[in-house]
Image (tube, rainbow, N blue to C red; front, side):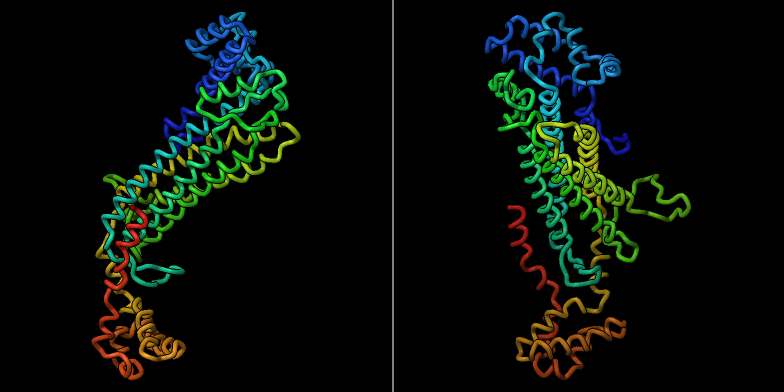
Length: 433
C-alpha cells in the first residue's frame, strides 16, 4: 500500500519482519508441542526457542535464498537453520507450507481486525458526540435530492452511528470467522503430525483449530472477512457522500474543517473543497474491490493450489491498511465538521412551507375529504409556491375547499416544526441505550 494512505501500526502487521516472526512462533510452538508428545527431543525445542526468539531475522538473506530455491517457506527455514544450528532438523516436522502460511495470515488478519475495531470505536464516539450536540438542530430531509420533510442533523449523525455500530458487530463476527489455525500436514490428514500439536499452537496464538482443512484453511472464511470490510467501506462512502452533498455551495449546511494555510485550488483562491470526503469515496471503492477476488479464491483445485496466494499477498495488506486509514480520516472529518444551523434553517424555509404538505394532506382526509381530492387540493396550492409565487400557508388560506373544513388557526398549527421532532428522544433511546 502506498504511504499516502497508510498508518504505521497497521503497516507494521504486514511488514516482512513481522511475518517472519509469526512464522517462527508457529514453528517454535509446534516444536514445543512435539517435544511434550515425545516426537522430538525437548532440548531441541528449547534450542529452537532460545536461538530464534533472540534472533533478528535477516529479510534480505531470506530473499536471497528464495531467489535461488524459489520457495518462501523453504527460504525461511533455511535461514532459521543458520540461526538455530543442528537442532533445526526438528523444525517443521510433519508440517507443510500452508500450515505456516495460512495460520500466519489469519494471525495477521486478527491483529488487523483489532486495530479496525479500535478505529470503529473512535468513529462511534465522534458520531455519538455530534449526534447529541445536534440532536434538536432542525434541517431539511431530502429524498431524490429534493426537499422532503424536516428532520434534525442529530438524527443524521445517529443514523450513521447505528450503521457503524452494526459494522462493528459484523467485524467482530468476521474476526471470529478468520481466527482459525491449521497444522494438519499434507492434504490435511494429520498423517505426519499429531492433531494435538495443532490444538497447542492454536491456543498459544489465540486461534481456534480448523475443524477440517484440505491442506489449506477454507477460503470461504476469507471471502466473508473481505466482504465485511467491503460493507464497512460502503458505509464510509455513504456518510462521506452525505457530507459532500451538504457542503455544496447551494446547500452549505456543513463543511469540512479548513485549516489555516490550506489551499483549495491551484487556480481559484476562493475554493474550499470537500477533499477529505472525496478521498474517502475513492478509498471505499478500493476496499470494496478486494472482496471479489477473495470470493474467487474460494474455488481452489482439490486439496490445494496457490492461485489464491498472489491475491492474498495484495488484498490482505491493502484492504486492511486502506480501511484503517479511511476510518481514521472519517473520524477526523466528523470530529472537526463545521455545522451551520442558521443555513439549515434557511434551507428549511426556502420552499415557503411546502415541507408541511403531508400534514395538510392528512388533515384534509381527517376532515372528511377523500385522499384523491385532498392530494389534488394540496398539489394545486403547492405548485405556485414551487414556482416562487408566494407562501404555501397563504395560498391554503385563500382556498375555499381548504378553509371550509380546516380553520385558519388549525392550518397554522400544521406548520409547527416541533411536530417533526416529537419522537427524536425515542429514536435516540433506541440507538444509544
